Image 1 (cartoon, rainbow, N blue to C red):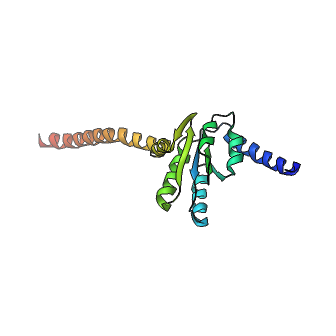
Image 2: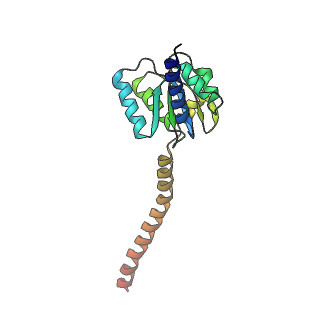
Image 3: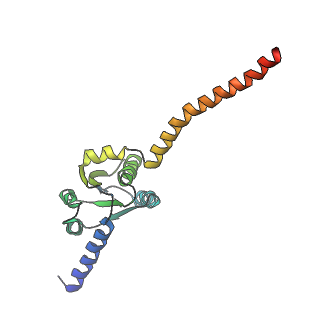
Length: 169
């Protein structure tokens, strides 16, 4: 192998390591069967969620994960593999990939590492069903606003009823 080829491979390995440095999660997926349009649509969803989605050669990904929290991912890096990485939302890669899998009826999870823990295909599928932080906050706010809203309406009904009773006297 030429010196130039080795340098090019090392640049890619360093790029992957840089993306994984400080990442909350990384998910490996078999992307086979997706069309260019589907891949573009999925990449757009990923970008909007601040998730990096890239296809690399397995040999380069394996070298990049050596000695990191993501090392166990090397076990599933056979055949077509793409990696989705998030530094800001631990469940975003799995959640967005699950939506793409459901929408396109193609691709499948291989495995992932979320907040330092390795998950196999089934584990990542379960993580993919966890709502986003924003969805959880919205559900929580809705649940606490409901009783408060009932209380306010009850008070308003009592207040509206009082003047009518006073007028009747």
